[in-house]
Amino acid sequence: MRIETLVAGPFQVNTFLLWKEGQTRAVIIDPGDETDRLMDAITTEDLSLGTILATHAHIDHVGAIEDLRQWSGAVVCFPEGEREALRYLPDSCRFFGVPERPIPKVDHWLNPSSARLARIVSSDHLGGLEIVVHTTPGHSPGGVCYQIENHWFVGDTLFSGSVGRVDLPGGDWGALQGSLHFLMSLPDDTIVYPGHGPSTTIGRERRTNPFLLELD
Image (cartoon, rainbow, N blue to C red; front, top):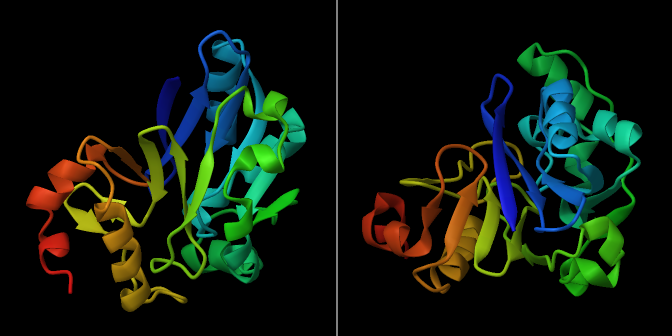
């Protein structure tokens, strides 16, 4: 699998462009901003976009979804538990003083019963990638992580040396602790791709992350 990380927008969100060697269909996770740049990255690799995924509904992770959907015809998958939060995207744009972004049209709302994306999205749209969805609330009410083998795209649940904030609407420290305990049950060599900052591993965070050392 190829992974290209594009750091975009004023919030410096990590957008992940993924594709399987030998395939021409790509998947993108958390396209938050700089739509033209994301389009250029896709076309430069001679790819077409098949699926757009979001880990949660915060503005910095979803701002470019609708423009990308209209440009590419890709299917959009979104966590069911973030449905209400997504409605506040225009309000968030006004609050942060950024250009208003359209609420994206969602093709598939993901819930725990649809853990494997291949059950609801065609293999062609996924470019042959086997993607598993895991519900990890806390930073937001219905946030999810996406797993491809030992690669985990965790949104704002876990960072290198830190964890997701819970002081935004819908944040819940108790729920986040549960999600972090779940992530810490993974093997040490699990590679973690956060929504902001550098990638890390579960083993590194287990040993050095001060917030994890304080978990109940």
